[in-house]
Length: 353
Ligand code: IPM
Ligand code: MG
Image (cartoon, rainbow, N blue to C red; front, side, top):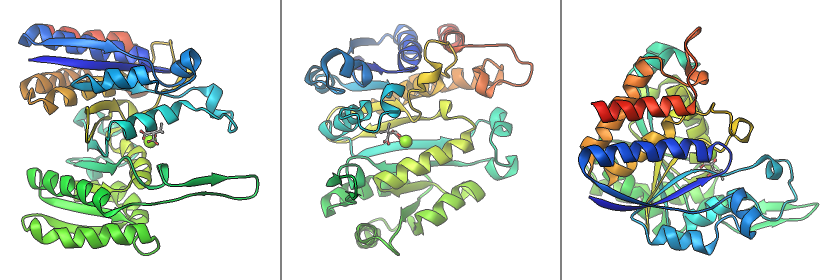
């Protein structure tokens, strides 16, 4: 298969983990006879420094003219510590999501048996946890009307029927392909926008009689994902709740560095780690490349390259089981592997499999 892939390394640890993601794609291309054409583009703080815009038009052009975007992370301490900065790297990510129409963010949550002990939660609670959080990505408070002065500030949590319907449709369909259990997470006891979500979900329920649908308030869901993670199959929720919930669910896997995601919608699909740019670790060969590598696997699977995706997953599992791990998940006394070494081990495994 021929694929044109836009490569957006971004900031912080982004370029280092992206190098490993691309190396893995190259190993797959060689093994399976695919042709991947890469077009690299700037975004985030790098792009602000270069052209004053965290998601420049030239980058958008490249994304629009590609089959898929592989994205790493944006963010920089210079901006985090400056609340008055007018242009911020994160605005680039939001502009990219909006302009590419990426309304559905798929964040799978699974466990690796050999890492169960790395989670702050008890093994017996976690074993078998396997669910997906479908986060709405282009609406809600992130994009609603905002206002800020020295006395008053607000963000508007606004959703329209079409925005809610299209993400719920995906959620029901995803549940049909999985364990047929959908949990709609909202705050319908307080928020009007949540009540519209719930109303529309209830209207749609009869169209999916094979799916068991339940409803949970976000505060309760934040507890249940940790106390009973095996209860869930597909969770669908609005933008802000999904953002918060998926940092929380990364504790189930054991490290943020293991969580990939895909963002789907109207234009080019995008694949990215759930974690951020971790600027403190940049250029230290410390960051876990696995989330980026698994994002590349999700990219391939999106195009039906399932054997290719499966081989990447097998290589990642093997690396973890062989204790070829970055420091945050390494066993006590285990050998030191950096970003490069973990990536290279996975590439070698794929090439020799
Ligand atoms: C995420 C991140 C982003 C978000 C930030 C970097 C803007 O936290 O992808 O979860 O809030 O969506
Ligand atoms: Mg987040």
